[in-house]
Image (tube, rainbow, N blue to C red; front, side, top):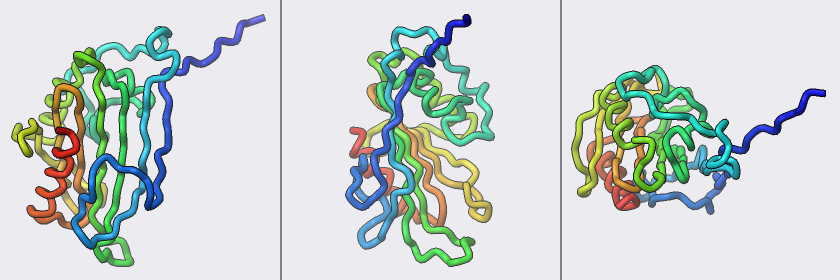
Length: 206
């Protein structure tokens, strides 16, 4: 009789809720008086087999210039469960938000949206995630280095998820303990609105 091998529990997902009481990693990014909805709010953490089962190891990350840029950030060909080990994460946090900016009913002018991902890195960044993200944002978002509230960032743009919107701002935050990126998409973001959102994220990561 062939022995059945149980699937390794390499990572776990937890839903953090999408109602009005759900906790988010930062304050309101859309400004005062703007109602917003939480479209996705979850986390991924290492599973009970993550350190002991060789089936959970994803090996080294590809060079940032070897990624396929047709995917959303981080342009890594793995699902979110697989990214926990691939990125050397103790935790991956996602939050996708949308604002009611008076979008038209035909969907041609969507309200502003935020796609945010945060990675709590294992001590010493064993996978080289910070270097990977810096290179990947350079390759796929034409990003340039800069700072937001004193934090190192790579700021560029990616194709909008809304066909009529052109480009969306994409900014990676790179700190020794945490990496994060945000895509500001949907309806038009003014410079003031964009800067407010980025400062709020920087304050959370600092």
